[in-house]
Image 1: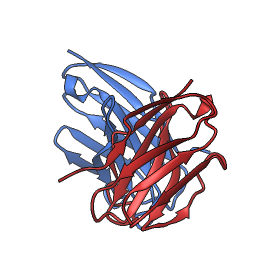
Image 2 (image 1 turned 90 degrees about the horizontal axis):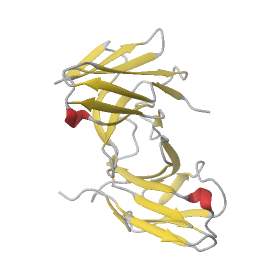
Image 3 (image 1 turned 45 degrees about the vertical axis):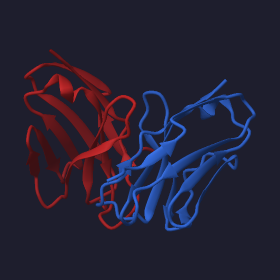
Image 4 (image 1 turned 90 degrees about the vertical axis):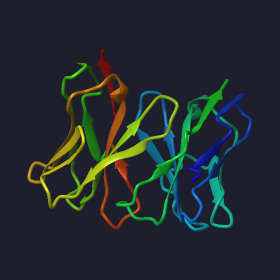
Length: 115
Length: 112
């Protein structure tokens, strides 16, 4: 079956512009996660959705970052007024429910470059 | 504050050798410890996982060893192959919790 799909795969934009990153989770997965992976770094948790609700936004780095999920499916991560330090790979993952013991299925990420 | 500390940052091993990656955690409430494998340009994928009721779990050439008293766990890759060249992340969580805490990752290079 289809895995987690992220788009675009690559995004280059100028500092100060807004960007939207999209995640299509595996059908039926109620839990959805966004992570950020900087060059040579681990996975930095950004936000967790259970259905359309985001009970944990604790990882969002600043108020320039926001995310939403609609229909219990597609999620969009928006970064406003991008800065060069926002350059990273943004990974989305989904799992059947929000339980740590369930494998998180990752997409291949969006590589964001801020000029 | 990183809840899971992983070492080494990178390692190089000859084909057929053993790769060993170590992780340590602080939160004694953690009771689920997965390892993820990531190839360049791809997202991480679950490789193998262990719970603290066992001290070792083996799947093919991959073995997790777990030391509850020391709050440490490790991944051993036996008979390492060039196709094992990837970045490996350890992680920890509470079994019923949603949040995984990831280590910083180890890049493994297997020389032919």
